[in-house]
Amino acid sequence: MILPKTNRLTPEQLAEITAIVGEFGCKIQPIVGAVRTIYAIVGDERDDLMINRLEGLEYVDRIDRIQSPFKLMDKRSDLATGRLTLGGVTLGQDLFVIAGQCTIDPKNPNYFYETAQAVKEAGAQMLRGGVWKPRTNPYTFQGDTKSLDILMEASRRTGLPVDTEVMEEEHIKLALDAGVTLLQVGARNALNYSLLRAIGRAVATRTDRAVLLKRSLHMGALNEFISAAEYIAAFGNPNIVLCPRGTSPTLDGYRNHPDESITPLLKEKTWAAVVVDPSHSVGKASYVPACSLAAIAYGADGLCIEAHVSPSHGIGDDPKQAVTPEVLKEIITQSRQLWAIRHAGKLGHG
Image (cartoon, rainbow, N blue to C red; front, side):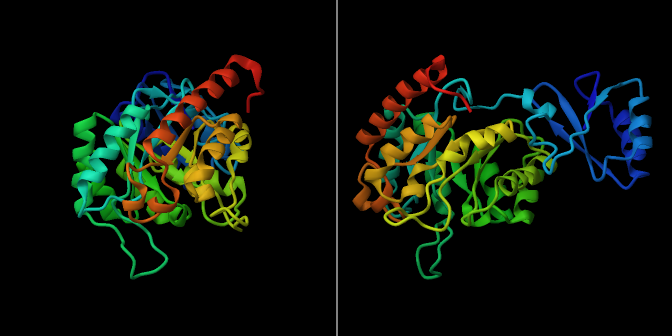
């Protein structure tokens, strides 16, 4: 990883370092930050001659060589100095909450508009809404691009930025063009490396956009989860949030195997913020409050919760796992109290 002495290299300087690393079979990937751009060496960076030549350039401050499966996401990476702000909240400095419907019903948009307003009043800082939905059964509702207009209209009415899942490259472009702030990668696509690359490229120069990466469905190693995030960072965007959301095998009574306990383990390895999804972890609205508080106790930076003004009228997962706005408000209130206790040093930090 190359750190220049100035905020960013000139085109001529970038061309020079690109030529040098190219001689050793490597490439340069700029990572554009809000204040500073760093330059990742993609490939085997262990060649001492290449490093010596780069370090000899007058405009290079230093070269960081991190021997880790995920060089950019590693806690020792220079990217650790960055801060991600979403919905007016700098993650890690205050509790961050995303809330809203699992699936937007294009036939009943008012439910979503009402939910959006209720989510804002409950204290959430970002609105979630499913436009495109991955489904196990090919005959169930797969989402509708028309719902993207509903999502953005709700954003305009409330002033809340939005999060939605993308599953194809076409979805990425549509979402970014519409103004979606947080692109969500679901559990089924968490190891879809071509999609992760495409997202990294698409948002490489968009410092105002970020990616929420959910943990894959199977019980994968933490390094596999972080390495999936590395694909996004390596292709240009470091604005990444890791989202444990329950994994397989399922635990009797829960939808998945709740995994909020991995939060401190992730924080030992990577600088990325951790926002836990309790709704998919447990899969039942009545269990979501406890799972939310457990996530905060483990050190999560925020929560991604499914909520609906009338869950029984929802589609997708909402009827069984969406909480009402009243419950959401109580979750946020209690989570903030626990957050304050934890960050006052009364509980151990991860």
